Amino acid sequence: MEISVQEQLWLLLSQIPEGRFTTYGRLAAMLPGVHARQVARILSQLPEGTQLPWHRVVNSQFKVSDFHGSGEQSERLRTEGLLVSASGRLPKDKVWPDSVL
DNA sequence: CTACTGACACCCG
DNA sequence: ACGGGTGCCAGTA
Image (cartoon, rainbow, N blue to C red; front, side, top):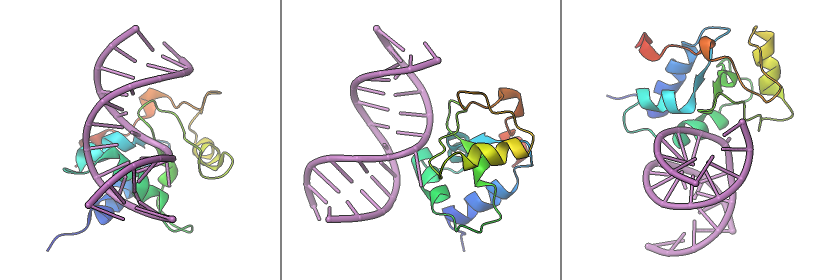
């Protein structure tokens, strides 16, 4: 009995505390056989009312993609106390350590 | 710092 | 099955 990649990703995502963030690549690296691109796709298909912090995932450059409307992701991050630079980048000292599992 | 390239996984027509 | 596009990444200039 194995849980799907999708569910594993959800569990991982739910572990990210407020004020922290991670990247598609880091999440993918924690799930053997999963590519970063697949992570991005799964996150993009989360239901609208989800409790999961999808906004705490950015690309490897620590930059917010903001494809989700007009700046909603950056807005949410700022609300959690994460300072987003003018160019959309996040501070590297706030990265979620992937050693939790 | 930015721009471009190749490769990977997946979706759609 | 096939080719083109994408929200990625790593490498390079």
